[in-house]
Every structure is written in structure tokens, then in C-alpha cells.
Image (tube, rainbow, N blue to C red):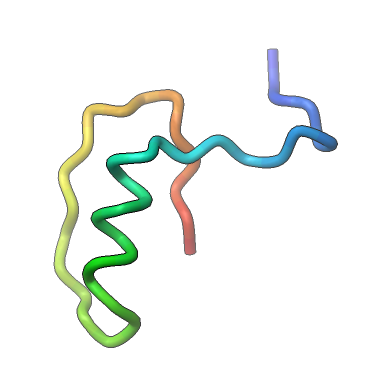
Length: 41
């Protein structure tokens, strides 16, 4: 079953923190085991 559109995408807190710490120009690979997370652009 897919997630409701009105709820929006789910991003794990730890994953969001790692992405925010990298910045916009850094293109390193982030390993995650959070299977329920949506990949943010």
C-alpha cells in the first residue's frame, strides 16, 4: 500500500540530518538502512 499524498513523503530523521550536513555541492554516497524513507532530491 502506498503512502497518502496528504501526509507527504517520509524521511528518516538521521538520514535528513546527514543530507543537511553535506550541503548542496557535495555528492558523496550515503548508506542507509532506513527502508521506509523516501530518497530526497
